[in-house]
Image 1 (cartoon, rainbow, N blue to C red):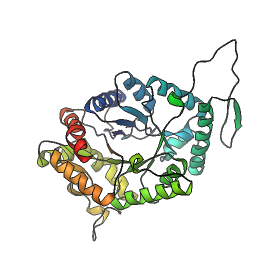
Image 2: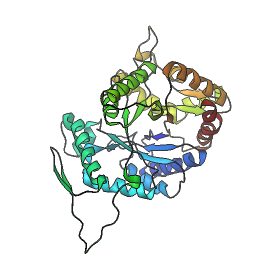
Image 3: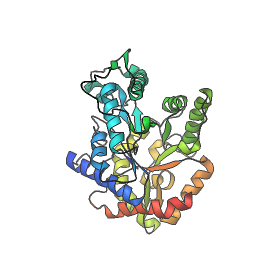
Length: 348
């Protein structure tokens, strides 16, 4: 599950936080394997500025699920502080942790941190990771970079240190991509990180895998389909009609109608999904229900996912977007359970 969170701007911070923790716990109980939480500073519809707080709150109330910031926007964090925070969370979770990283997409988020021009953000990501990996190695160093200075001091025998290293000695890292020829997918392939594709059509997903695998091979790495995560909108109910109603009239439909669809239209992100003769202005909730979302009975959703995989190829993990069904959570929670128990095992 990807908790972006796509919650109505009318929700209070406490309501968003409570829904986030509740969803992480229910995802764990339902049998989902991962729960990612977005990080944004200024967005009304994506309103979690501190995913690590959700992770901390859910850590002791979950047992199996892996928790992940999706993603920490590295240009906006001092890497030494973030590395220690991440290392501690991996210890608390005893390895149930993935670090999602990103460069940031919203100028308002950058401006709050004193960055007016985001042209250096991708270089800042690379430098931040370099510093954090040096810290996680646990050896003394001093680093003077283009954007940050950081070091790992010699231990004072008179004041023994706590264990600051990540659980298992290494932090798995994931990178999210959306656009065609995504630089994030290329970066993930070069570094051996987990690729996370936000769905924008079969052609875009195939392009993501090609971009990722080409970069991986060029760097001497072997790309694995099992590492590829794909994010989609999924909702399951007793019947196809009931699932369509819950999707269109509930949080999924509200988020797309009021927030996502205008963004996709403005940035031409629908172009890779449109049928011949269509324009992005022709897209409505019924078209999304039929062509972008995966909604229906458990049997219908399984059939749609199988057909999609036939044309898109294998992938490792299906991630579902979370939507705001907090006013009446029972159907949404049942959809999560059915995905894990009735669809996932048959999809393989």
